[in-house]
Image (cartoon, rainbow, N blue to C red):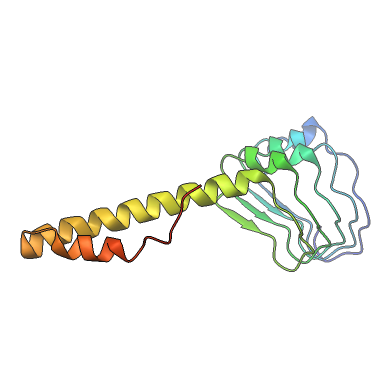
Length: 151
C-alpha cells in the first residue's frame, strides 16, 4: 500500500494478526491506523513520508516490531508507550518536528552510556595489566574523564 494517495486506512482487525511487514510509506495518512494492537506478529512497519502529527498509544502493543520507520512526517512528540516495543532495534524518526521525547529514551541512553564506559574502562584496565602489569595507564586515562556525570 505504499506510494499511493491514501489519506486513511480501515481499522485493523484480528484478520491481520499474521502480517509480518506493513508498508504505508509515501501516502497522505494523517492519523495513526487504529487497531494496530492486532498486529502482534509485525516485524517491520513503514509509515514514513506521510502527514502524521502523532502516534497512537496503541503503538506499545507492537512488541514484535524490530524496525519502525516514521521519518518525514509532522510528529512533534512520541507517546510513552513506544517504550513497550520490546523487540525494537531500529527507530527511524528523522525529518519530523519533534520537540520532546518520552523519558524512557533517557533511561536507555543512560544505560547505554554506562555499559559503554564500563566496557571501555574494563578493556583499558585489562590492556594495562597485559602490557605493563601495572594500572598506571588506566589510572591516567580515567582521570581525564572527571567531567562525565551519570544521572
